[in-house]
Length: 375
Picture: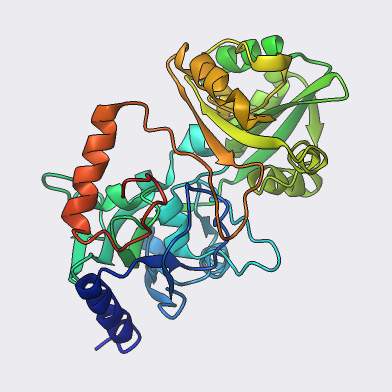
């Protein structure tokens, strides 16, 4: 019997009966994102610990309240990792990011365009639905899915479908070879052109970041894979090779949004952080005010700092190339009201989300208002 889960189950059952809103929360490191934070806090951090880990099978099962850093440390001891590099966003006085929060947020770091997203490594989940029923979906192998792959619905659901109690993840060995190349004095047009050309070649591309600082653009490209492949790419791609130990902190800062480009927003309190997801081959976007984005994922992810009033123009610019834009960090985001908007893009998609929400959480008690004002 899981004694730590019993009181949580009873609380969910009582909340469903009374229709009391519950705010599922681990470390609270991503409270800045979403439309609103409502309900009594239901802390998941009592559900902690690695249940099973088979390094030879590249599979780990872990309880949802386990600190993400604790899981990453256990994997590192075996020379393995979460290749999608989930951001922690852990800043004082926030707590530590949790594994459940990682899955619920569905956010991936710099390597996402090359290795896949959180959902691509999610093998199975156990969760409490809105009726306090403990449900298990998926398992511990990639071939166990028949019918709907329900487990992957939990990645990016922000706790609106259920309370995750346990997750099983596929992990990978750390790449034996790594190098970062820097290309200075390169504008966004040329940076995208290079990334598009490299994307069509057999190169071990892993991550990229183009940023403009004081009018000068710089492109960083990280290579990971077999040592021979990385060394060969360094010889053919050009640029300046950087010291791995030194540049590792910069890639972490990119993942955690602590690079100067991100922190500079503090000097412009009326500006929000916008997230534009577009096809990697999309050209330079016509952004309001001629602002310059920070470009990741080989061109597929473009961060923009702009007032919230620029939202319609940003969404139009992204949709014009087949993408979308969403408010990632609102100008006045805080722990009691996140107000970062999700862009569901169509009424049909909103209806699908609403039906899923009703199926898993009929009383609407889990994280009401986090993803949509209506539920």
